[in-house]
View 1: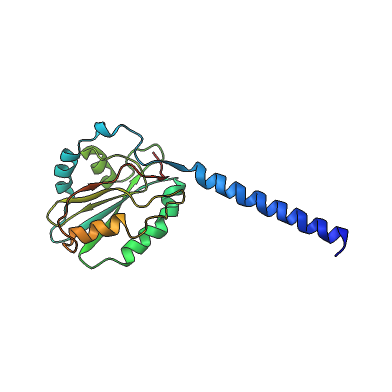
View 2 (view 1 turned 30 degrees about the horizontal axis):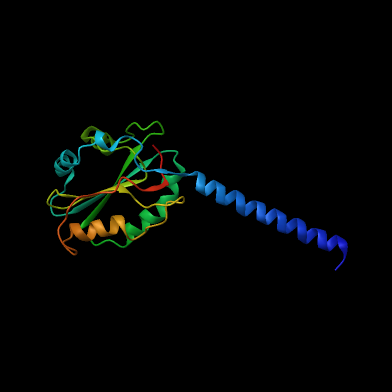
Length: 181
């Protein structure tokens, strides 16, 4: 191998290392708490009661809360699509869209904000057919919003369907990941 070829390989190695470090730093920089407002601002008992207004007769309702212009919402779409594809026919999926500034971009988002639910995104809300809140929190965790697939929302749907015990509302507000506030 000539000196010229050796330098090409060294430069390629340095470039590849720099790219990997840059991606790692970028990914780590997107992590933030799901809920940046004080938890005491949100009354869990009231939210549980208010969730009954979101219920649908004979159907479990799963609402994805997304924010326009939020890279985290875009990345979480793959996970959301998996949840939708794997669900039973007794589950209805809806999207609540927030504007980039956090205001309601559709009627469902306006209803959620009026009920007092936090505006972090991407998030999910699961309400049983009886109007019981099964889950409110992030779709997933991690810097890329793809960790914990099959855990939070999927388990809440199972509880709402009666597959794994009682519904028991789960508020998952303390995760770190890629969220837009």
